[in-house]
Amino acid sequence: MNEHPMVGQPGGDLHELTTRPLKGRIIGGRILFLKETASTNDDVLRMGRDRGCKEGLVVVADYQSHGRGRHGRKWISPPGVNLYFTVLLRPPIPPEEATILSLMASVAVVDGIRRYTGIHASIKWPNDIMIGDKKVGGILMEARTKGGIVEMVALGIGINVNMHSGMFDREIRGLATSLKEEAGQDIHRPDLLREILGQMDYWYNELLKGNRGLIIEEWRRRDSTMGNEVVVQMLGSQGRPAGGIRGLAEDIDERGCLVIRLSSGAIRRVSSGDVTILRKD
Ligand code: BTN
View 1: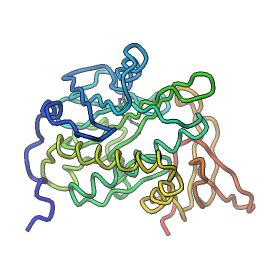
View 2 (view 1 turned 180 degrees about the vertical axis):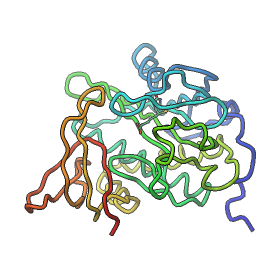
View 3 (view 1 turned 90 degrees about the vertical axis):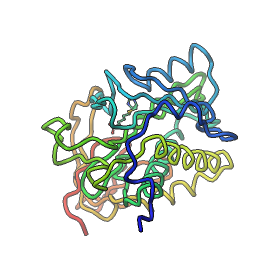
């Protein structure tokens, strides 16, 4: 018997989410569906600024014409197959602690995927969602600060749900996958999203209770980077290479930085970059 019965249902109409928000929750209490947009991160940042929208708003789109990834890369966002959504948060934390939100989001996405599909996803630092060696999702966090505090955060999440391998750009084919490719069946997008939002709401409440350390601990338990020899390609603005370092990925620190032990024994902390895992232990 299929332990995860929602696998195998058709991909679903995302519009239905708007009629079934997550009642009584911070995250997902209001869900706005757009058939088409440039980028859901832009929508949320604009709505947060111009309309003063409350935290917890989720904007989900069926298609993004200008989906953005980290370091100015594009995020391919074809219609009818995937999940592209952004959550608006207004956390009472200083800007230097905001990275915890993207760690929290990656824990929620991994758990949502595991619970809903049974697929064992993991996290590659900082917040690539992986199935084995292939990327299935990513998180783009953009914060706006005012007077030394976080005014709002747009947590943008893209997950390859029902895309087939032929739809990926040639450069990333072989490095990317989708849940359908892994499960061999269509995944119902609205219910997967509801599961992820429920997880995110749970962890956000833990954060508000001050349980930051717990989120870092849970992130470590889902991580597939640590204990491996890695090369970290540091990237400047617009994704231009800004040097790389090689060493053993040892840990993440309380700010979410990757702690790397160089062959000299010295320790380096990296706050952003692209990790390539050289050897699995
Ligand atoms: C990454 O580079 O790994 C992050 C990808 C984030 C993509 C999502 S899709 C929804 C939201 N809107 C965007 O334009 N980007 C994020």
